[in-house]
Length: 396
Length: 139
Image 1 (spheres, chains in turn cyan, red):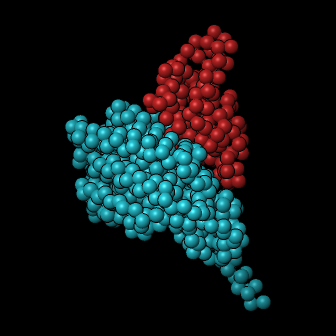
Image 2: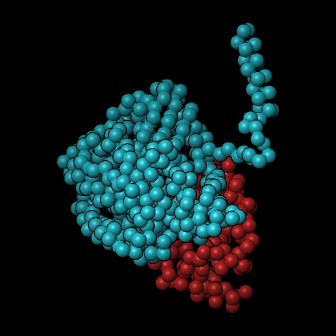
Image 3: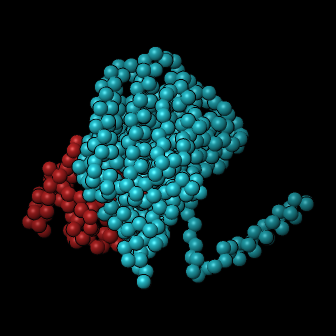
């Protein structure tokens, strides 16, 4: 049979961001998938290297509007790793609190969009309705609904007011009951079960082979979680479970995310309880960063986010590298999408909760058809001259 | 075109164009449709095709790859079409002014009629902007 190609994007009603997929289909079965990215590339790493360490935090916040705690948090961990800077205990709880609030709103956002993609708009409206109190809590804690601007090297910028705690608790109680209700309704829904079970399966072996992270890997039975494996901030001081499922299909990814949301509300409750008793400073004053390099990791809602910073003793990083979770999760499409029907393709693509804004850090354009050699002769020739010149100058 | 604009203002159909944003304004736009803000009560509907759109909601600094596509989208939209720029990015370039991959002026790519500042703007601000647009269309 002849194989046809279905182009999706770059501006497609179902895609939140501009991206381009090309599905190769045989009849109704997806045979292959290709992805073209680069529509979101804004050159964050380059800009960050021209800014000071504090300005970099605001910049990496704008990598992605949904992970606007994860990136700054990994970034400040990287800077703190250079000098082994201590963080006050109260600041650690506030960081964890904001991080978990972000996880809840990101997971609920995904749940809503997933419902929207499979034509279940009631789920969309529900999930987003109960996401509003979470954003309200974010507003109470940080002053903004989305970009929080609360992280600093050595602590946090804004303290949680004691007077705000009853309001936080009230909102949290509301979220808690509603999330359990939505989770039970979504888990037990016979239509959702029939629609999502056995769709887009990512096996345990594939999850390891593709180095999947976050809920994508946990749904396939790989129990990896940076919060437990490499605890930072207050994660070693609070109790929580790592949710692991075994089937690796879209339904398990949904269940993992829903149960994680409930775990997050538990963490937030513990953090707020601690904030009542733990008093003290929230920011260690960091005067300068010594030369060196550091790494920072954090479990973003989508998986592990990794930042690398190198300092030469001045007030700005000379190298800043970002690796977002979607960078490793997106290639799992080639394992999970093959052999499914076209109607299941979209929900499978959405199931890893891809974030292209996070992913597109470097841009390399190569035309494989025209230029089969992977190197450029001109560059090779010039770099040889450069090497020889360096040798001569060194000898002088 | 006064008579036409007045009829248009009764129910604005919007199309969302993301020109390399950070997703935040886009999420807030979707937030407008959900129960808390629910702009459908004002007759505003998010449509799937640019050919049905009366208003383009544009977010983000346009990078060099996406800018020609946005120009093409604008050309495909039936005129009159109003372009509302959501967020600080299309207005001033936000923190991405120094980047090597963004266009210098968004106005060179498509004409922009209205700006909503904020990073991201609150949904209330977006509703106010749309209400103002409806007021202008009614004359």
